[in-house]
Amino acid sequence: MRLSRRLSSAWLQKPQVNPPPSPKAITPPYNAKQYPDSPSWPTFSQWTAFNATLKGNLIKAVPAASPCYPGPSQSRTNCLAAAKLRAPDDPIQVRTAWFSGFPCPAEYDNGTGHCSLGNYSPYVVKAMSKEDVSEGVKFANEHGLRLVVKNTGHDFLGRNLGYGSLSIWTHNLRGIDFKESWTPSVGPPLGKKQSAVVFGSGIQWRELYGAAYKANKTIVGGADPDVGAGGGWALGGGHGPMANRYGLGVDNILEMEVVLPSGAIIITNSNSYPDLFWAMRGGGGSTFGIVTKMTFATHAPELQHGIRITITPGDSNSAGYTKGMAYLMTKMPEFVDFGMTGYPIMSATKYESLFTTPGKEASDIDDFISPIVDRLEKMGLTVSLIRIPSWSNVLANSLGLSPNGATGLKTGTNVMGTRLLTRGSFADVKNWERVLAIFFAEGYITEPFALMGGKVAQNKGLDVSLNPAWRNAIMHFSILDKDSDKYGSVAGIEKAYRRMQDLHVPLLDAMSADNAAYFNEASYIEPKWQHTFWGSNYPRLVGVKQKYDPNNTFWCHPCVGNEGLVLGNDRKLYRR
Image 1: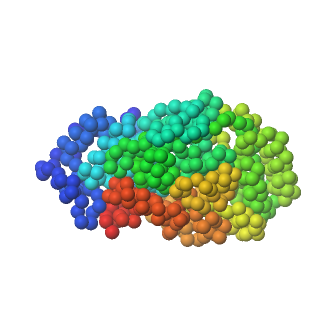
Image 2 (image 1 turned 30 degrees about the vertical axis):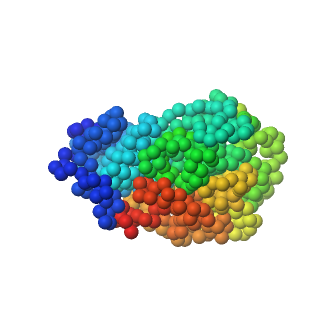
Image 3 (image 1 turned 60 degrees about the horizontal axis):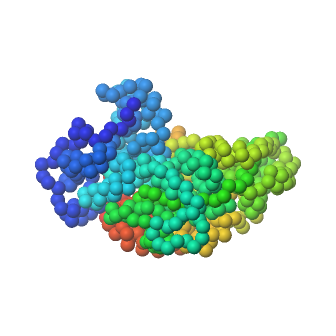
């Protein structure tokens, strides 16, 4: 089944009679971009010529679920297939679909529904090369189009789609090349031996972990194997199972091949475009340029013994379980100091995570965890431990089985609020009892990811644009609304976000590192998002943005330098 179609005359708009104005005349006084109903929207012949430039890789977008609706293509079989489609495999579909406005749900319709693109892009550049990306950026500039970037579609804040935009889909930029002794593409040699891996930005962690396993290398990557390795994960910070040992994703970036807002293709590293290199290591994706290739540091293999911990209330009541979880939270500084990190999922009835301890023997893990388990069991909680030998843990990760993740919250809406929590916030067990009792009563699922400390803190001196609060925090803590998929409307989801942001995120503020949050996993309605995501680095980031993208070729929210434009109720961008 083909859920999207390549450009053909049958799918293009009819030619406009009048020729398009010159680029200088394209932008009206207030409307910042051109849209399908704008007089200056590209003509039939211009889209056709653009498609020829791309060698046929311009896609006229069709909603994946269009076979669910009345028309010549309606099919129950294809409708069911659309419901199972993964975002990385489709030109327009995204992970957090509610930002599209739910224009075409994958539900078989007998004639009462309506299917449209909503906020999805009507045209997509299926980028097969850096040149395709460059041509896409130039075309958007020439015609004053809004430009968005989609890699795998894994974006919780909806930055990878926009009404009436031209989308550049980078998922097909491939290639993985391990180098035992890497040399910068531009600039002098490093002066020391550095192993590295060079990969196309469309590569997913599933693929890169598998390749690293075969190359006998360790890399810092994400917990979700479907996430793109060379996209927003790395550019926004990038936490992962090995961060405590080797630093965050941004700490491991050595070089990037980037298409600038002008369409120019450049190499950025510590010697070449150093201000851009600084900004793109923490400043986020879809802002300063489009990464087409990335180079990451690699590390020698070592032991990665793991232990899966599952905790349930047991003989304790709900209050006893809450006390037990509060006690466990107070031990998190010891976890990160020991080097034992993971991705726990904690609810009112269950705590579960696989923890990995790079470089530690299995006996060391037992010695560390046994006193904590004994205390929890004395409190009446039931604790289950499954020890996972290093070879099994490493192999599972290489196969993309995501052993470091628990069952978690599977949702297409992801109503969430997050903060980066400091070491000192874990000393007050009574405060944790109070906060967790509120979250549990609310029915929230929480994610107390104690991943930092260690090398993340030690890398405090690195000159990157990442929020400095990361270096002082030891936990990325999220609260998730388990009912978010039940709201069924954009208005219902927005209301849930607002309630969480107003009532419950403030409970974490006092425990946070300067009210900071992870740019890639947070509420899209953070009231002081510039400070929350970038802290003291924001003014300098804006300066780099204005230098390389003075015309806002790239715009998203909440993203660096977006204050010059505002998204109207009609979904169009306007100048302030």
